[in-house]
Length: 297
Image (cartoon, rainbow, N blue to C red; front, side, top):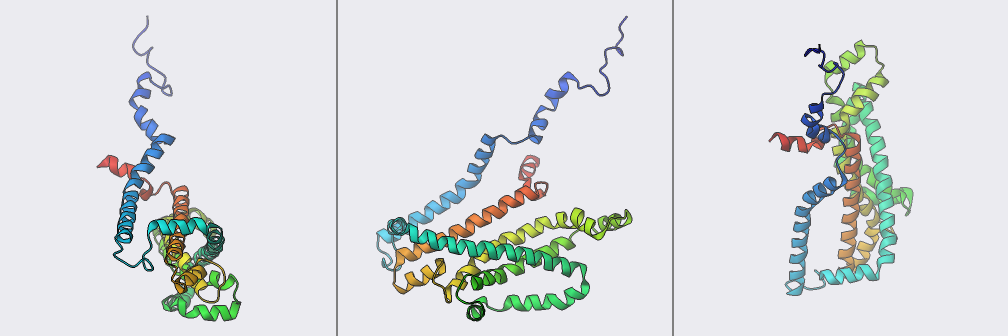
């Protein structure tokens, strides 16, 4: 005779209704479908696109009504024609500025993180170096650009150095803040369990500092563009900064606006790449889980 206890499922067996009851939650924990990602991207992009379209509309209206002389504010069509006609030249100079920016940003990130580690782990180094870093930051970088040209010549080196100098400070500040934000009890527990300093840094300190570090990197990558362009203002024959000087000297407003647009695109693309890197490195952070906040509200 079969009893009720005989038909009970085994402790490890899945019940038939469990898949239905836990289905939505299981799907939420799974990989987001490509269609849902595209919809989320479109939902997040339509507002900036609408604002950009409105700005272009205002720009076109000002140029069409000639509210401002054409040599000061050219029409969007004139800027587009210039970009099409001079695309080869602009592409060459864009590549030069992009290379200088990327190299300067990477060097600033590596040197900045290494400096932050030294400052956090050595109180003597912090008291000795941190005031000097702050002092170097407040010096106007445009003032030292001619000195860098004298030291390193007219090549790409002074532009890269200037990009490093401008992007270095936000990396150091954010990395120091992130490395110090770790719970002291967690560090004490790690030391109690016999973990070395290197293992504690690799497993606890550095991963825990990534949210603040990535914020500093996003600021630094945009400043690196400024540093490269400022360096091209002084003693350069290539790059978007050099083109900007030529266009300004010749009162070529369409070329000037086209150059500014390309500079902005470099900064935006590099910012988005750092944003993508942040999504890959810290998907667990609260800032990357906005859907949970929406669901809770």
